[in-house]
Image 1 (cartoon, rainbow, N blue to C red):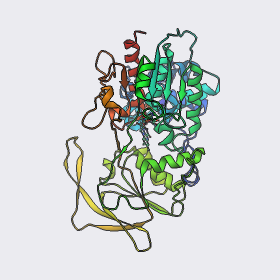
Image 2 (tube, rainbow, N blue to C red):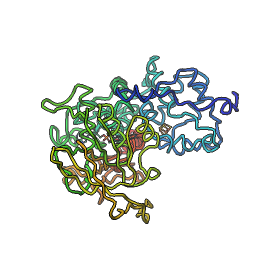
Image 3 (tube, protein in one colour):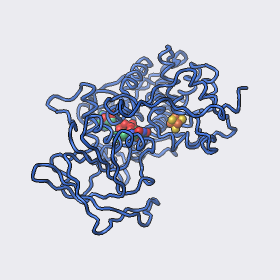
Length: 471
Ligand code: FAD
Ligand code: SF4
């Protein structure tokens, strides 16, 4: 047994963070990887609590204390094997999960004021280093079946579903309209949180395992759902949530006002060299930028604009800092990189100045009575209007799901918020109202987190394996 008091001698270290002055001019991950000694030492801070709350708060219920112990003992390949038993994308969750709200927030050491075990950094370390050292998922005992499954969407939900299916002898074909796999982890989340080489490595591993990707192929355009239903024994949909939420104020359609996701996707494609012919790079260099919103997408827009060389970046949010939906870690990073925050501000409208600049009208707000979800509504303070002159306004109010044109004739039901109905609690988990079609991720939950999409993709694969009588 190791030193159970290691947590008192050694403080928490999630890895070094690149200095703000350096990182704000480059699109690279800002946390340096843990070295093997540090990873072992950090893993050794775990108390191996009898009742590991971290596991319960982790949406995929990772066996956290078990793989921490293996890392402490230097058993990297065994740790990688165990980590993949519950998570299909551990190196990605280790990078982008809001750990402060999930596993690390629940760590007993955090509750005791000693600083949580650096679970996310160690999870990332395990898979990154195991892949580099030649570890690959063990497919030697897989018995292949003749079942054929199509997956629509190569985002985290689709990839996780493919991972579980292929490990159980069903070779899936994954269709995506984009030119690369990953969904929002490739095209939404910027490189300073997750470098794209990480996803390319995962693609190679999945192809080696027997997954086929058919990219640049949109279901409903190049291939119809009827063709999929004809050719395959079952279909999984992990098509995400892409309906832009508008602000509903004047001036939203003015030149210079941008939607968050097209702005981020354009920048990722620019750095990947895959911008479609005729599409210009949307650069904020030398511009005065205001980002509206307080979630992770808003933070990613702020920090992208900073790295593009914006003259100034202001982030305006209608509630206070304590009530922001975004990860506190990312808000802190944005502040360090030079983003100015205006809390308690509500946009009233956008006008045009004589010189072609934009005039953003904001009012101050105060927090009123809680809404139906218990969140306190922001109320405008009369007479508090201010105008900010800027060159671009980026609107980052979130995304909703919506039904595809072909849902109707395939009998797929959606709820009043456009989410596909595919509950976990039924005979075949995540089956839709068409028995041959399953669904999961943002398409079912509404815009959420990578790790929850992974969980639902895995659960749906289990539902499909039962439906196909493989299990
Ligand atoms: P998606 O990732 O959206 O993937 C859906 C895929 O389906 C896409 O590739 C799409 O092209 C494809 N598709 C859709 N329709 C079709 C069709 N008809 N034919 C073929 N392909 C189709 N979560 C975190 O945990 N941490 C973060 O830091 C974080 N940051 C984020 C930042 C931004 C800017 C955004 C927008 C989201 C962020 N999220 C974050 C949320 C997270 O990315 C999503 O919850 C997650 O990617 C959802 O996975 P998914 O597989 O359900 O959908
Ligand atoms: Fe924590 Fe996310 Fe990893 Fe679970 S998947 S252990 S919540 S970082």
